[in-house]
Length: 377
Ligand code: 0PR
Image 1: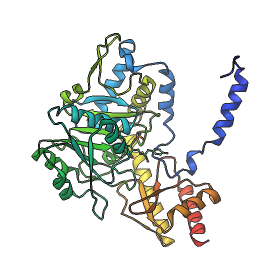
Image 2 (image 1 turned 180 degrees about the horizontal axis):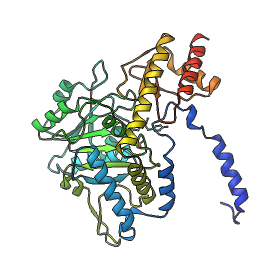
Image 3 (image 1 turned 90 degrees about the horizontal axis):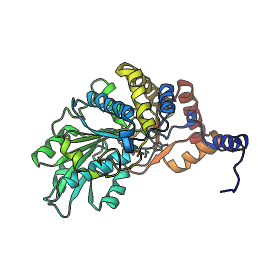
Image 4 (image 1 turned 180 degrees about the vertical axis):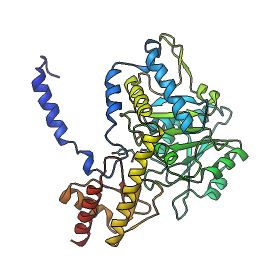
């Protein structure tokens, strides 16, 4: 750090230069994030200094958080959820598993069972919480094999995890079956709906995945993905207060006497952003966004099939994985020749495309054209 401060114009020009190196979302098909809704941005700016880590000082923002939880509870069929707004799916998953473990103190060597398709946050969880994370295989449709889940349960199993919208393929595990298994074995069931939580409720005839299933004890849902909110904005919801309480630590010198959150300082601006966009859009607004993304997903599918490329699974939501040989090479070519950002998957290997709200019909058509060029070169 330099000794003397610089003038704002110089600092700003460095910022502009840095910003110009960031890739605009229009060419990004690899991300689960998108431009936040302008209403979320406006609200975020209004609450920029608000710290939910000491919410006794920010009771207004705290009321907004309670409101967001109630709206999320309504979306996920729980009229009285307990929880809080997190920094995203990783924190929500860590806290959900920590609550399972803390609620089973008598089990000395606990384990949980997650689908092999679970997000890498569960590898972090194994390391941080020193808990055995057992991976159950997935079937050919890339949803978890519940028979394998059942066979992995033993006396030290504290809970199961199901995914509603897997990171790589957008698949939904059979959560109703997992719910029954969890109840039969008196263990917890956390649903990672970080992506699908703001998608599935707006797709008619979607599979059950939320608190309407009696075995579901917690859910992760991310407003900063398909919720159109600002980063960082995740949410963790528990069915029962005692699970949330199992996370509580004393905070003697704050305006509040205890905290259940993972981080201390927490962005009140994110809370305001999420509150504002959820109120502004309502279910109708989100339904329109999801409808549009699904239409674009089907357009993408139709276009790639015309050039002889097929999806790994029929897309359940706005994520498409394409069966293409040498996906790493294709990814590189798409980026260097045309500036497209796509990701690749490992098992099975494919090119993965997330059709977020920033995508347009023109861009989908242009992308498929460029993909065709790369495949034929
Ligand atoms: N659970 C699921 C099902 C997820 O897909 C993700 C993230 C998480 C949990 C973790 O969420 P946070 O990253 O909010 O903690 N899925 C994306 C991924 O890892 C996140 C992402 C977003 C990656 C934007 C890249 C990107 O540009 O692929």
